[in-house]
Length: 398
Image (cartoon, rainbow, N blue to C red; front, side, top):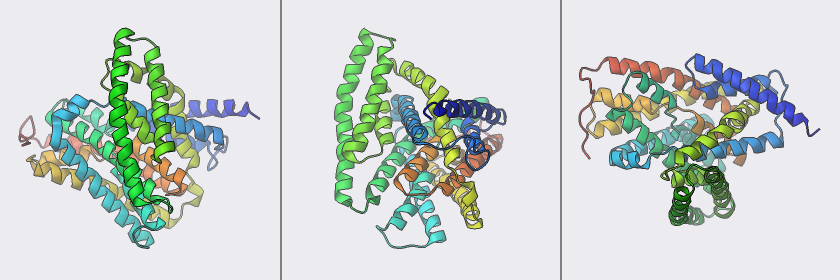
């Protein structure tokens, strides 16, 4: 019956928030607790909530709001200030894990040739590894009083660029995966979308800035922003064949520089934090099929975690060293970039929706989030304890 969904939503919200708080008490990301809540109440364990079309659609709205908020929280001025160094570190932090993840899947399941569905599944595993979530790193650096230093700023800026590049990679992988797709058309439609985003985005920014100036801090601003997010997400998916989350993220970046961007983000956070966010993360747990886990899947999950952590550290650290950081500080950048969270889950969810991965592989992504969240603060504190210079770094050259 229709009202059964009300019971499901109540159970999801209560369990997700309870386990989210427990996770925070244990110094783990709240999303880990919400995923565990989904596993507990889902078909694999208690079976009190079943995945339905309604919950799937709610989760899709949740992921769009998360990406819109991520775009709104982007600091374009800080991004431009750190400039080429953060960009180079982000590129290395995407390319090395992308290659590592692709080779890992190929090592386990073989190679059928470039352009096959098997190849794109391997490439997608690498795409999941490209994601970075620095919320744990931010908290650790803040506790040590290092967040505003040059290393902290570099990590934050590189993480933002990393996610932008990762979303672009995801767009291409999903586009090429379709057997009827023409590579030239995929590239053309993707480039056309971003050109349109720049043009329409500039006009939209001016309009929002004007409205914001005339009606500052009024509810019509976040309402218009939310509608703008949904329109961009729809246009990206429907007209360009690009993931809706890309459209939502771009919409957030377009509006991140208006005066009331924080006010919009604050209002988005209310609905996302209270309802759509918990439903999305709990739905990951609901979809995760632990009954289908075999010894091979567990072995793959362990290898997935190891490769994801090592490739991110190696890629970012080596590039930081090339930018004249000392070795200790280069490792700080690499370790700071290795945490995974919401974006990795969002990418995995998109892969499940388009048939690039199966639900049993969510286990590997969840393990990665848990391990990276626990390991990052410990290793960062160890690296900072080795500092001889309080600033802990050599000046970088542009």
